Image (cartoon, rainbow, N blue to C red):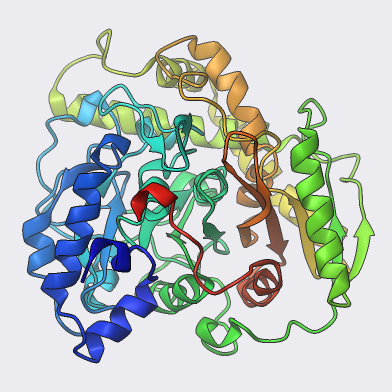
Length: 471
């Protein structure tokens, strides 16, 4: 298999060739490694694992398909989990697989390594001090988004057809939007974070994959979306496999269009507004009813809730690691932006944290009432276009970086708070810098199916293109 052939295929297409014997798993892996070597400057893979990939199981629906695991809170036996942090730079190799990894292995995927992430996932651009910036394959001078930036860049570059990602404030959808991918954040409790985590960031964070096709995302959710034994809670089971929803007629839906950010202090770029309006026009051409909406006046700024809940969890991660190391925090242990987050989190009292949890669930109920009679919400994926690298450098002007993240997460973080499924869908053409535009679709809790059906009406073709330099 030639590298240029490999980069044109999604995981389903590669798996079909392997199953038919038209290409071997070894030839597929050789092609992936060739693309990785060619795109090394993008800095997507922080811990390679070619030996593990060579030893992958030959069985399963994705037998022989290369993938990557985000290097954040997800263990791969035999590899360290560094969390994008200098505190974990010498972490010991994990002695077990996380549930997601075990299920991907059972599906036959070949784990090529671990992908880059901002420190502890606290960043909408992937520029950690530990491993350096990840570059956007469509324009290497620009950000690939965060925090699943390494995974998104690798998929957009054609290194792997899909890659693991997590999302606590937009960290699947933001990188997908920056890199021209389909990125679904499933409903809270849909994908197991076990065996070591019950509900990350008190339920704000979830996991899935970034992909270049709807059918890959759907088939992977069929694999990853069943509850593991002992889960504290789980999302409602789908009526049928998600793979069956791809290409299915969504019927005539009522779609709520919102082009202003849930945080009124965030200004939305006109290009982002235009992409959402154009997507609404396209969906209207399929017979859907489009209603222009405004957010509820009493909506709490989602970023305030995310900060109040996620900050203490991050500080706890730092403290547990320091206890393992047997020392106090030192200058240079943390990136500048993370240090600010941790210092602020140490001032959050237990009542304030619990208040954040209560506001989180109250917001979920508010938006559920707001969507009464509405099938799907349509928004810009981000309030800004993908920024140049360096603008959100966590070791530059750290305070300005934290402030600047708000534009990228302005539309995404609300659905981490509510627990609803939401997806970034490439739509709207390109920026003058050649970067993708995207919109966001969000459905009622538990209804990922309608997102797969509706997204198909926005996307042209079955497989999204890899960045041209990957060909």
